[in-house]
Length: 283
Image 1 (cartoon, rainbow, N blue to C red):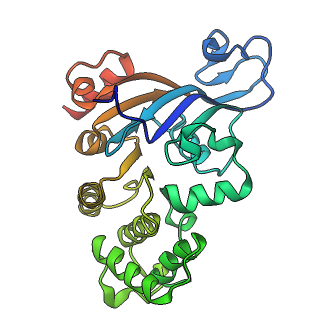
Image 2 (tube, helix red, strand yellow; image 1 turned 180 degrees about the vertical axis):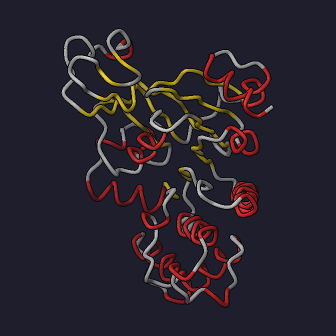
């Protein structure tokens, strides 16, 4: 099926490094000889993302799993322009027909991509919400940023999205600072969906939540996928979350992709030692 489909997102050879690199470590995808985990023993450069390449296809959930420091959040925040990568390309099907990397886009084009093509849900809701604005105003802000000034339409869209994420409409005029952590994450999701993005980026959205709240948020993500047919890039350190939601999975370790494939295959027959440890921890 993927042979004839155009990916919604295609990332090629993404590198994010902190430091100048040196002749011993700055050798692209093969920079493994002098690295201690993802850090050069000689020049102390940290290779946070070391030659990532992958595709996300229409309507699929691509899971990314790995321990802290493996490069998951670096990837997500690079895609959402929170910081610039060192090298590599990322093309979106819905931007310039996939012919130009989003990292080569102008400032205005980047705002359009963030407001119309991608939606981001951060692990910490403070990064994705204005805590003193009402829940409805957070959604309206995203809609206004995309160029819509119809107040009635914004109100209707806010009600629709808050209902979709199970926030009572009676609370739409309350600020997220009054909400629980799980409710704040659901408001973030509704805001990210405001302009019908092609792809949703979810970065550790259940971390720090009580187990019962985690389960509700995960059920909500499944519901969102079913309702909107959206592609999702889902980052987690928890393979149980990936097992529940992801069609395919990428396993990261020390800034590199060490395994990828269908989630069921990875769970049933993990190849890399680190993946085997992850799978064993679920048993």
